[in-house]
Length: 143
Image 1: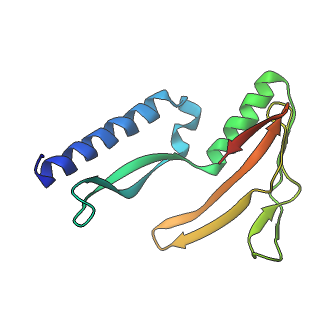
Image 2: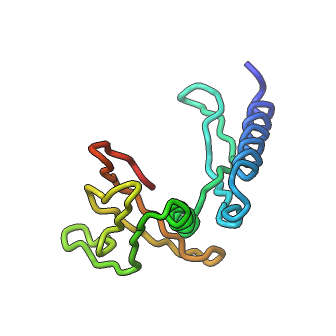
């Protein structure tokens, strides 16, 4: 087994290569929407004494995904309707988009997407949404 520092360095180098690849494969119009998010990843060691590395993962923000969807629909001559209105779901207190987005390419969500905001002193509010879409009888997970 390699020493812990080697495992950590290799995991970080691999993650950085994947980040560069993600940016390179993302069209230029959307690269500015990519944020590199740090996370801890287990890279070795037994369950009783794991070895963790802090690595960065690429994340395409929700506003970038919306821009990409709008551009894709415009280029295909298809409709894509999305609103920025939210209401509070009474049981959980989570925010739900209303009305749900509709897409002539991907269909309409089967289940509501949930939105959460987090604020930190060094970061802008970040929105995350995930849901299931139905398109021609197939379920497609979005996020």
